[in-house]
Amino acid sequence: RKEVEQDPGPFNVPEGATVAFNCTYSNSASQSFFWYRQDCRKEPKLLMSVYSSGNEDGRFTAQLNRASQYISLLIRDSKLSDSATYLCVVNEVYYTNAGKSTFGDGTTLTVKP
Amino acid sequence: DAGVTQSPTHLIKTRGQQVTLRCSPKSGHDTVSWYQQALGQGPQFIFQYYEEEERQRGNFPDRFSGHQFPNYSSELNVNALLLGDSALYLCASSLLDRPNYGYTFGSGTRLTVV
Image (cartoon, each protein chain N blue to C red):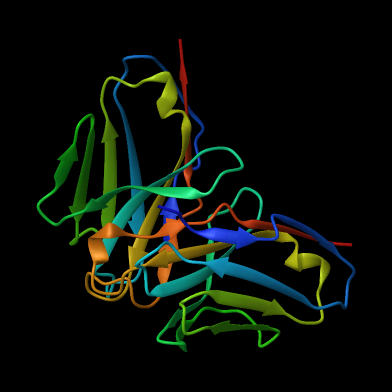
């Protein structure tokens, strides 16, 4: 079993739709969490950190459920430019960049006109 | 402000050869991590350098080694290349004491082993 698991998709949604991705992690020592976005044949880029209380950045909302060990990402009012692969990332060390960050294999989103 | 710079962008090597990949971190960053990304998979952690020392290592054999220089730049060396080493190698820089800033990735070196 992988340490970080994501539904690979693809998720195909129309513009304006709301879409949600989930991610589960197996290491209960994981302490910091992120969502990254990766466009085709490009490098990953940080989308947002995920806080215990949940956090929002414009159309994007991230939630963390420590008891169930899963993280979610909600995208509202999808745009064509949101088409990408979304990578879930967990880090063992509490809120530092030190140590190993484990990436999921990503969920692919395609937003269609 | 230059981001993370990696060189070369593409590389073709023969099985058994050795390769060195280079990374210059984003200005002001002090930590460099290396990742291997195979097609259709997420990046896999190789190792991380801070203050010129390897702080943590992923599940990669000793054929993979690295170095960090006083100017924070870094090298990844792979010896005795195997066909399975063909992948995108990503360098990520960060600030050790700014965790929520996450990583800044370079555009990667695409290594093909034939």
